[in-house]
Length: 215
Image (cartoon, rainbow, N blue to C red):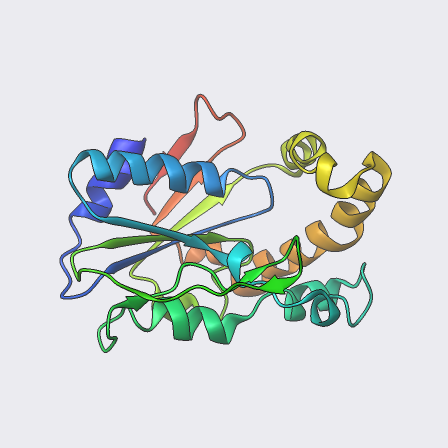
C-alpha cells in the first residue's frame, strides 16, 4: 500500500514542491499514514516535508467562541486556514518563494509558536494532513489528495485510547466526539464530498490490512 502511494506521488512531475493533502476523520490514521509514507519516500532519497492542521489551530477563545460543543464553531472556527495558505501551501506552489513554515500555533498550550520559515528545494514533497482538509478554502492548493476512511465505531475505539490523556475522562471525550467532532466531520463529508475529490482512498479500519483504491 505504501509503495503504491509513494509511486503515484513520485511520478508527479511539477516545477515546484508536490503538495500532498491527507484528509480523514479524527483517529482514522492520517498522521500514521503521513509518517509512514514520509519514511517510504525518504528511503528513495526524496526530500519530504511534514505538516498538518494541528499546527494551525486558532486560539481557544476563537475556537470556542460559539461554545465548546458547537458543531458550527468546530467547522468554521477551529483552524486558521489563511495562515495555512500563506505559510505553507502558497509558498510551495507554482508562484511561491519556497519558504515553508511547519506550524504556527500550539493548541494544547494555547500560544503562538515562534518559528522561522525555511527555504526548501522545489523537488520536495509536502505531506499535509488534517480533519476536514479538503474544503473550498484549501482543496485547490493540493497537487495530490488522499482520503483516509474509517468507521465511526473504530474511530471512537481509537479515540478512547489516544485522546484520554487530553480529555482526562471518557465521559468528556465521548461528549466531544458525539456532540462536536463527529457531527462536524459528517457535515464536511456531505458538503465537501472529499471522496469525490480524492486521487486515492485508503480504507483504514485495520491498520495491518488497509484497503487502497485509486478512483
